[in-house]
Length: 145
Image (tube, rainbow, N blue to C red; front, side, top):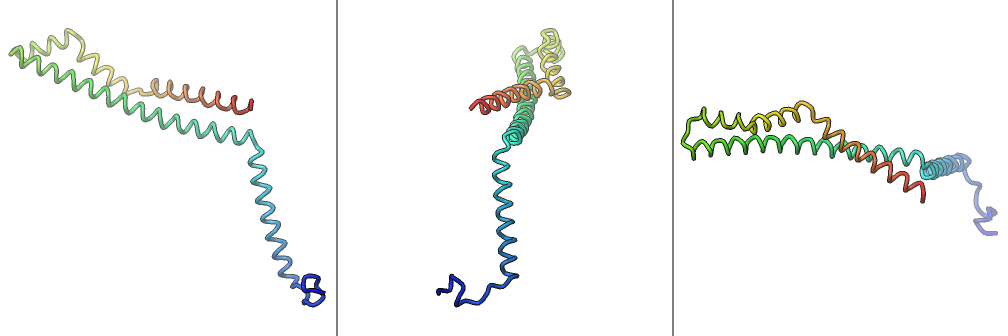
């Protein structure tokens, strides 16, 4: 007989066999867990929604920062235009300031900047809602396939 049939070879060590069986069980357990995770559509959908939420939050924060930066830029431009108007008119600073206050442009720009700084939530909320809707649509489309 050959060595594979066991006639010419010595008997395998029981401890080695137990270790091999334990390793095989561990490998099989990991395989079963991986298959169960792939089959769990609900958990995968929740994971996808969570990822989409995180992405939307990041985008909303970025958009809020852009809005604040745009408000600062607008305020700076209004101030620059007011200064140029002062130079061109060779009027006093009080006259230029009065004209800017009368037009309300400076106050409106500063008010908008302050409101966005105090409460960036409306812009963030709109972006979050849009992302949530997109996420829900993707989940619904994915479950129909």
